[in-house]
Image: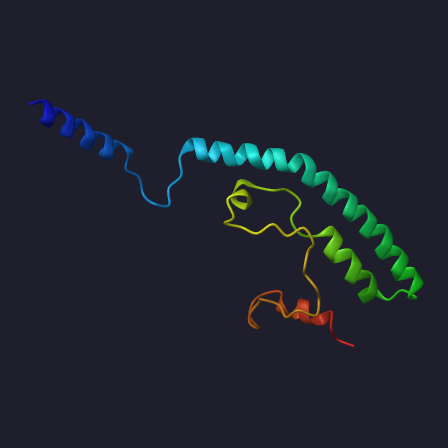
Length: 127
């Protein structure tokens, strides 16, 4: 009788504790949220300093090169774009943290040729 009671308790515990392999608990989600808040306390000011230095440097490079937009853009984009806030998805590694942005105009667009707005994207390259 005692063995059946113990076996039933163990089985009940396994059934109650069972969850899908990819599922996370509320406690785990709260921990990731708290970690992202803690990381943002240091990350956001560092990103802001880099962006400010990039804005000043990019402006200086633009003036020093006689208004060459690509030279200025090569400094402005990496320093001012990218990830500005760390999210819980980035804490668990499901999304990347991109401190320096990487959206350069010489990279081909992900837009299809027939999508609306494609002609305006190509217009910036007409010379």
